[in-house]
Amino acid sequence: MKTHLTTHVLKDLNFLTFWLSHVISSIGNTLIPVTITFAVLEVTGSATSLGLVLGALWVSRVVFVMFGGVWADRISRKAILICSDLLQGANHLLIAYLFFTHSIELWHLVASALLYGAVSAFHSPASGGLIPQIVKKNQLQQANSLLSIVNSIFEIAGPAIAGILVVLVGFDVIFFIDAMTFFVSLLLMLMVLPKYKSETSVDNSYWQDLKEGIKVARSHTWIWKSLVTFSLLNFAVAAFNVLGPLALIDQLDGPKKWGLILTAASVGGLLGGLLSHNLKPKNPLKFAFTLMTVLVPLEILMLIGPASHWLIMIVAMFASASIIISAVFWDTLVQQKVPEHMLSRIGSLDSFVSFVFMPVGFVLAGPLSEALGMTWTLILLASLVFILNTWVIYFKDVRKVEFDKAIEIEA
Image 1 (cartoon, one colour):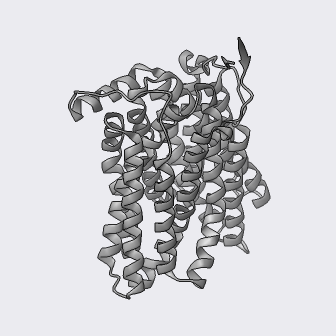
Image 2 (cartoon, one colour):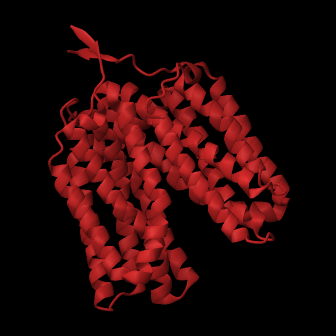
């Protein structure tokens, strides 16, 4: 006998354990960006040193992300997540000790950032690839949505909490707390049992596996054209975050208004996670990409003038929601359509797009606005997003790809 699935994914103890591991490690992770900024300035007082530390983290991620995807497909993804928790916990425990003993130096923070970036490059594709091994196929969308909701909540609360803790307890305590979250996450991951899909052993070389992953991505038009869309969106969102403060700089309370806009965007990410939880349009990518095609260019164009900050907040909230909905839908489709032993490689390609194009957007936004002027730069960015997104939606296999019809299980 068959029956419709009514059990929520959080009622599965195995996924609940994995989700709690993600929640706990995310608590610490959201404290670090603000903490490391003030820590570097405390140690060196130099903006150049801050750029060096942040640059080390991003370069490390870019260099290692493709290695991470290949190796997560070659060996146990659970083992990679456990090792990453162990390394990150030890990394920040050492930094906490160096702050506590007043022996911290710039090179310590650079080395820590390099390790943090490298390990996160392995963690992300392994985590995405593990999800289909621990939840049923018809619960993938719920699982991805819940992970997105957690990320959005801590994205909203993390910077404020970190700022308060920097003042109240200091850098040593914050890094110690972060280290402990990784160790607790590790203990929870030990209890997670992959059971729905067995991992496939491979005999190919690393480079053969990498080429195979790229070949699979190229053979599915909806995958590589989605990556084109995400790359441009990452570039545009990064540019928006650089140009937004410049557009508001001459207004009274400009920094406060920009802070409210960023908060609204973060709330929009949470809204997108909530909406994507059970939303099942017939053509998910067409639905999500259409939302982004309208809302993201509109968000960028709001800076011309600029419009009222309240209006920018509303548009930014819905634009962020559309991006998160697209990400959840895309993750779910990849987990359903791509062979299990290829999942982490496709995930690493997705991460590579983010790690490369967001920094490029941060770097080029200023020079573009100086060369073309603010208004024309914003029009150019909005036009590129609109035209290329429309082009991607035009392709039949992007418009027609559907969620698997796995809505029934054995009673």
